Structure formats: C-alpha cells, structure tokens
Image 1: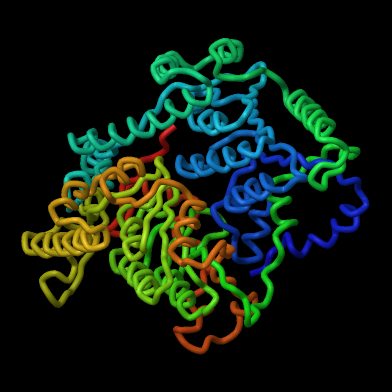
Image 2: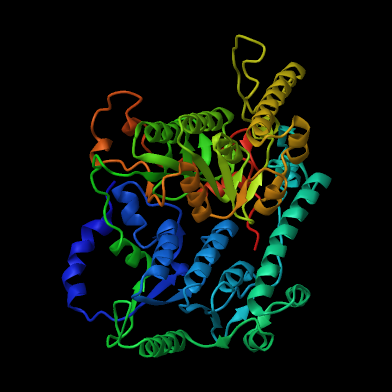
Amino acid sequence: MVDLAKITEPLSLPLARSRPRGPLVLELDLTEGVADEAPGDPVSQIMNRRRQHYLDVVEGIRRGARDPRVAALVVRVDTRSLGFAKVQELRHTVADFRSTGKPAVAWADSFGETGEGNLPYYLACAFSRVVMAPTGVLGLTGLIMRTTFVKGALDKLDVTYEVGARHEYKNALNSVTETGYTEAQREASDRIVTSLGEQIIEAVAEARGLSVEEVRALVSRGPFMAGESVEKGLVDRLAYRDEVYSELFDQVREREKAHGKESGGRSGAGEPELQFVTRYHRKHTPPPLPRIANESGYIALISAAGTINLGRTRRSPLGGGTVMGSDTVAAAFRAARRDPHVKAVVFRVDSRGGSPAASDAIRRESELTSQAGIPVVSAMGDVAGSGGYYVTLGSDAIVAQPGTLTGSIGVLTGKPVLGALLERYGVTSDSVRLGDHAGMFGTDRPFTESEWERVNALLDEIYEDFTGKVAQARGMTREQVDKVARGRVWTGRDAHERGLVDELGGLETAVRIARRRADAGPLPVRAFPRAHPLDRIRQHESSEDLASSGPQTVLGAWGPLEHAAVAMGLPVGGPLMMPNLGEVR
C-alpha cells in the first residue's frame, strides 16, 4: 500500500525540529469529512488526500490524552460523515481525553440551521465546553425517520414488484410495494427512533446538568436561537472562531504556569502550538517494522464494510461505497491463522448485508479462526444488520454501540416486472428456452405459481439456516431467536438486552475483550493484513496467497449514484439485506 503521508513526511522534519516545542493543542475539523478506512491505491489516496481516517482520529485523541505535551483538544463539530455509532465511539474517546483533566472544547458556527442539529449537538455534549457562533442556531428538534414510498409512481408506469420476505419486519422493499408503513414497519421504526432519542436525551441531561424531563420538554420546543441556547443552559458561550481559539490558548498558558515551567517533559516557555489530530497521530505512529523472531505478538484488526458479495472486495475511487468481498475477508482470516504473531482478531463490521453464501463464507473462516485458538471479537460500526450480523456469528464475542443498527435476521428477494411498461412504449422481446423456469428471474413477467413455490422454498431454507446459526452462536432456542428475528432491526442497546450482542462499546471495548481472551497482556493492535505494493503486479502462487484476494479498485456499476439506486429498489445487494432506514437526525 502506498501511503502518501509517509512519502511527504521527511519534507517537514527539518522545519519541525527548528521550531520551539510548546504545549500542543490538538485540532479536529469534522467539516472536512471522515473516511472509514485508508484507500488502498495511489489514485484513491490522491482523491481522498484531505479526508481524515476515522481510526486515526480516534487513536490520535486517545494517544493525546496520555501525552504530557498535549494540553488541550478543540473540535469543530460536524457529523455529516458520521453515523450514530461512530458519534458514540467518538464521544467515549473525548470522555477518555477529559478524564486526564485536559480541556476539550467543541465549537460550531451552527448546530444544524435547518433542524438537523441533534447528532452534532449530541457529540458536542461530550466536551467540557460547548461554544456556538453568535448567529448560530441550535437545531435540537428531536428525531424523525422518514421513508419515501414510490409504489404510486410505479403504478402509473405499469411497473410492479414481485417480493418475498421472511418475515413481516423484513421491509427493505416496502418502498416499492406499499404506499405507507405497514403495522410491523411502523412498530419497528418507532422503537428505533425512541431508543436513539432516549440515548440523546439522557446524554444531554447528564452533560448539561438538567433532568431528563427538562431535556425532553426542550426537544419539543426547538430549534433555539443563539441567545436562547445559552439562557437555557444548552451552550456555554457564544463566540467566533478567533475568540474560541484565543480563550483556549490563554487557558493552556495559565495551566502551564500553574504546573511550572517544566511539567511532564513540556516546556513552559514555549507558545501553544496547533496540530491536526490525524497529523499528530501519524507523526507518532512508527511505520510497520519487519517481523522479528522474538516478537511477542499483536491483535489483528480486520475491517470489512459495504454490501457483502462473493469475490474480492471492491472500492470505487469515484465514491459509491465499498463492496465487501468474501474472498478478501476470508483470506484475511486464513492469513491470521497462519501468522504466529497474531494472538487475537478484532473484526470490525459495518454492513447492511448482501449475499447469503458470501456471508456464510466469512462466518465460516471467522469460526475456524476461533477454533484454532485465536480469539475473534466482532466490533459493529454504525450498521451491522442481516448479512452484516450473520458474519459476526463465528466470533467469540460481539460488541456494538448503543446506537448501532443491527439484527434484521431475515431474508427477502424480489424483482421488478417491467413488461407492461415496455409494451406501452413498443419495446418487445422474444426468447427460446429449455426448462420451465429458465426465465423466472427475468423482469418481463411475474413469477408463475411453480416459480413462487421455488422462491418460497429458497426463502424458507435461508431463513431456517440463518436462525439456526444464530441459535447455536448465541446459545438460544429456535423459539427465542424467532422472537427477536423475523427481519426486525434493533438498536445496539435493544439487541444487547435481547441477547444478540454481548457487550456495549466500541473498538476499545472489543480490543479489551480480545486481550483478555488471548491472555497475553497489553498487545498492540495492527491493521491486518498489510499488503506490499508489489503484490498488485506480481504473479500469485495460489489461492492461499493473501495477495491474490486483495481488494480491487474498480468503477462500480452505479458509482456515486449507488445510494439513489438503493432508494429506487434496484437490485444492488442480495437476499440478506436490511432496509436502508435513511438518516436519523
């Protein structure tokens, strides 16, 4: 992998050595966007050069909490590139930073001028001080989950959808088969909004010294003007950027004086210096060294995101997300089993699901890794539902944030029927075939009765297999699984209460569990596997050669329009897909 940061690093070293070493103020600008993982090819690295990597942000703040030279943290809050679970993990990281006594300031020009301020304000409440610009608005207005139904428009086009699902809560294609919520979809959606809303209200109440009832009442009266935000105790002060930084720097200088000219290796005479969190983290993270014979070992971090498909992981440099390839993830687990230095695996998953066969292939390799004596702990991201939950079933423990969306233990399949639309515009087709079911998945006609019999048999088989593996992995009966399955999506908090998740937390929690299960002390964590740049061009020896299953950078069929394709019900995933619930803001 080519890392441009490592290439340009030497250019800045002479200048850095000549500057006075004052206390560091770590800075994070979330309006720049945060990427889930580092791109694996030079083109993507260039196109995403300014995007910070989420794990670099989290680990940089944690490192700064323990670094005596780091004196404070200031963050420009924005959550457009962060989901609920990542916000919660970032909140825990900030709490860890604050526990050392160092100030952490959150500031924003506005917390959602158009009402979408709930999530950024939820993040800001983790800081020791919350500041907003004098012309800002605090959009604390409560959560809403909105689903767009296009069946009425499709009816006008003479387009219908053939959909089979197991069971009533598996509603990923309801937008093309219904004109509004079904009873089951409304029930499940209401519970998700209620659970996430309660988590925000409880956090705001604790941070701002208010009762839950007071915050609930405030939520129903938002949004709030700048002056009202201070008056009601939701914001500490109104200030512009220059005032925020000037005040924080003065606070750092005062702290330095109070601790003497030298405290913990810091120079009290130097002026405070700003440095981006990710820049700080990279400067203090040594490059991976060649393995040595007496190396004690490490925890391998295997990350997998996107729709789950057979084959290799694919990424598009033009956006549109990542496709999680079963070959790539399975090969990573096999490599972990062969590496004597890997003492445990943390499997980070962020996926709405996809192919049953691909999901099961990943689950199998995870299970084999555990059976080989290497503990596997799954850490869920913003979403780990349907196939995204399936792949975690081979692990020894599952960790999720309270706001993770998970479960969706069910199955569905469907196809659009375009025959009438095509006929209207004079588009015709003809065919020859061998076998009564040869064209059953074509979009020119509905399923026949005998084809529906096969479809239903397929759905039943996949559902029974899925729920059976859940029962075995979670130590539950089939009846207990069916009560929490049937395609229903749960928040991490609700999933934990129902036995689908072992512990609430993020990557730090998963690493702690992995270290405990490995019984090998405070092992370091390393992204795994680390491919060599030449692996892209050399010939591979066999399917056991890890490089042969490495990620591909390709232009996806939909590219940056993938989310629009999903919203239209187009077939870009697979049967083990949970619904795209949209943004909860």
